[in-house]
Image (cartoon, rainbow, N blue to C red):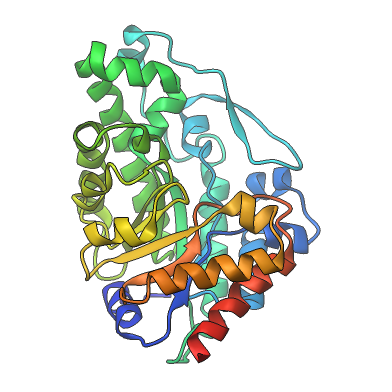
Length: 346
């Protein structure tokens, strides 16, 4: 469904009520009786999980799985799958600068890319028939696809410690690899746009390992290139960096993304000061210690404390600090939304 996403952002900022968009798909997979392995390999099962959660919870938008292996697999990386855990890259496929120079940009038919495009296509169609979340009613709810960021992809191809050394020892080689990663991610985002998704949540957590200057040079410059190519009135980018502790927020916002998604390592009431008031600042309830391992009582208190800290920022959207992991109790998700509803009523 085509939605004016710039207007969507403005409407959220204008609302008196705080909205929420937790990044979660795994609870929907489990509610439908499927495994992680099935969902990340089958676009229909993936889409059904997204639809199930959107029907169950009043999130302001839906998200597909945050899978940080899909693009690496397309390049040729080996992936380990599990019924109970998110996929993981095995080892690293690039051994030296020579292998970077020989690396080829994959097609959109490689690996599981076709299944993820299918998942977004089916989920986008399902969103059309669902009511919007919030005060304005109507039909349809935005869908955010997922993709990895350039520096995080480079780290999965070259090894994370290896890429951190490479940016200092051989920055030209690092830029060569980043340019190839960026070219593929941009092509993938264009394809996701064609499925009917209303935006993309770009996960760039590895950029949080760098200083602001290095983040600017080796991540944000490339992210900005992609954003300039794909972001428009009907499709926006949410830049996620759960590795950022606050030191590289300025580099993040230099990308011009429509929204910024922060992890629980930073203080939302501090990082939001660097976010333009016309862009959304989203976060940052701990997805493990609160969503998965916490209690409903802990969730309620954590949400209320965060909402109190963010009361002066109308561009704040309550969210998880990252993708909620498998086996997150529904009681904790219920408590998340119940606490928000009580805050808005109060």
